[in-house]
Structures are given as structure tokens and as C-alpha cells.
Length: 112
Image 1 (cartoon, rainbow, N blue to C red):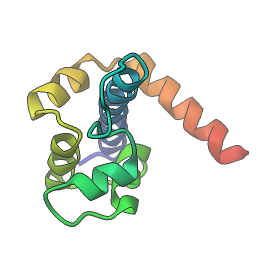
Image 2: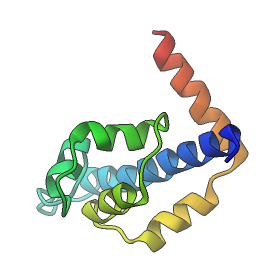
Image 3: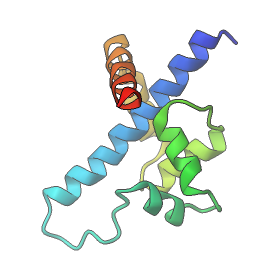
């Protein structure tokens, strides 16, 4: 597969995962209910997954820098309380502009 295509897929996966995690964080911020069970961090994702995945593996998926297996992505999505339909909806909405912005932000962080 073309390296550019792989890079774009990895970035789109990272963006979609971040959007889902952001939804959980926003829910916690806007709700007075008991939110202890809401998954809102990489560590909680790793702990809550149905399999033994490391926090570093979760972090890699969210970074867009390394290839993640589909199994890992499914485990992450489900541990956050979402379905692959939810993930797919987010993934399909990502634009070229979103990808460019993501890459700019990553470059800024790595240059600091």
C-alpha cells in the first residue's frame, strides 16, 4: 500500500478515536451524574478493554504515528462504550483539512 495512503488512514483513525474520547470528556464536563464509569483517558481505556492491551498501545493508536491492528481499534472503541458504527461515522466525516490540522498540531508538539 502506498505510504501516503497508510499515513492518511493512521491519522484518520487517530482523529476518529480522539473525537470519541472527546465526547466522553465533554459528557463528564456537562453532567452532574455519577461519571466514574465513563472512559476518559488512555489508562482507563487500557484497563477497561476486554483484552490485555497496554497504555502505550492505546497511546500509539491515538497518536497517528504507528499502525494499529483492527483488533486494537475495536478493543479501544468498545472499551470507550462505542460501537464500530459510531467509529465509522466519525471516520467518514474527517476531511482533508482535518488531516492537515492534525499534522500541523503533531509537528508543533514534536518541535517543542
